[in-house]
Length: 484
Image (cartoon, rainbow, N blue to C red; front, side, top):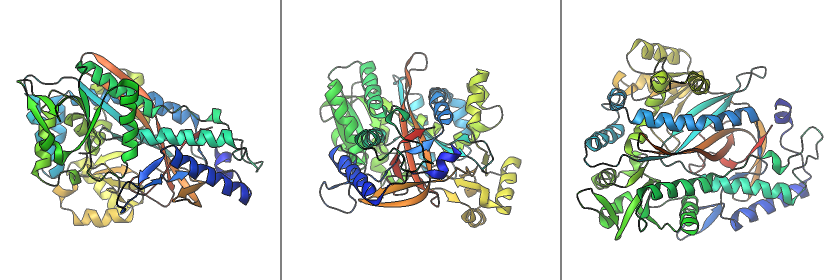
């Protein structure tokens, strides 16, 4: 892989490169690989930022990430069904993180409901970076985070894989003009069925609910930039399974929705809701008033299957990630030694920033040299982490109680390479790194597992100088892995 990285991407004559970009941009807009344009009235769409060439990725690391996903799916469920453990972890930060505290209070209100919905659904995504601190070091797969709510880009990641398949088959340009670069063939791209996987998983939850006339409710943000990624799932559910999807923001739930019956079945626009699928609600910005919290309470206390229930959201917090990595804690939930070893192989260093001896030790190490760490809050959506030199100024500014709302993570150092990034029809060559996400679906009542599957992948590539990696947030482009 090292030799491939050094020679990447293939060197093309200017005319071939121009033609390849033209093919790619036209394909994206013709096949729905688009996002809603920002700051423009109406439904104007622009192509998603994308990598012109697929990016080289080690096959053994990709295969490991694929193998890990069902284990992480099951781990989230086991954590979520342990009330005492959830209480222990959440109460360690709830007093210093208002948003997490509200989620935790909501969770406690759902614990003792009778009857309640015991079937829970997850559409998770585990994100990884390759770690290679020096050219001589072995490349390792290291988990960045586990997303348990609103895992985006299942639709557009599938389309990106289709784009690179098309370009590889339509042109000979992917075959290297430079003898130092290996030819790229469509057979080197792993199959990516994340879109059909999401569609079939949601349909399975709808089937388990067992009301043939019911709909799926998708909770969305009012001015969603990434709407077409969501629409691909919506259209697939109706076209493949005949299941209608109702879109609604948290702010509108109380207008259109209500409970009915002693078992609190959820009715929205006169349709019973089988599954509540959250594509919003993951951050404090989605709760601009008490109205949104009241709506979330209505959804969580209903008999609909939640994807995810609020307890899965808590299980995906950074504090939970750090807690699980602590010696002996993972083993409480995973008894198979081989599975424990596999999971732990993907963990990087994770440390509390509380006033325990371990937390104080991490605090002092980061103050002394912050260049090897990332400071993370309990937030999703990109743009929330604190890096390198900024860590020290934030640590000195925070009180000890404020500091414990964060965790400290070892900085993962991926090997850089070059690729051509296309944004708004303009291509630039840049030094980049890639972040791999693996999607998984889990449906269970705690006894019977209705589904536990790996669904597909997402590859996001960003300039190596950029810390964050969100496409919707503007930091990265969509990409496909070229397995080596």
